[in-house]
Image 1 (cartoon, rainbow, N blue to C red):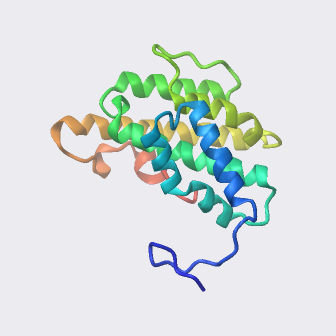
Image 2 (cartoon, rainbow, N blue to C red; image 1 turned 90 degrees about the vertical axis):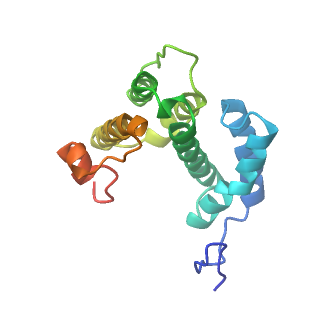
Length: 184
């Protein structure tokens, strides 16, 4: 069995249209603003999110693999924004961004105090196809997880000016016990 760059054995199966999916992912990332400049596009290509998705679901329709690659791209971009962008330093930006994300997943137009960030544009385009056919319970669970993520992140950025990391006593019981838990 082949071994990837991380030293993890991985099956050799990959979606046959992986290169086309990668090209389409880059066009989409540029259009949504997630990869506007040459450096961002090169970083996207190097990350290989399309290859990750193509290995995860090699037998799925190409559109599903592409959508998974888009979500992976959104999540990594969102994480970078939280670590490196203004969101990582401003409770207002966090609140605005998560309010806009909540609006999108509830089917309302997102309103922000500033220009709509690329992650909102990307999620607004992805959400209808992702949520199609999903139950109201699933949609509510998704929203609730998003809100728990917001709350945990607000706790984290409150600690940044002091150079500390939140510990379990600083997190709400909900965030400490459930945020990002694979069982929730």
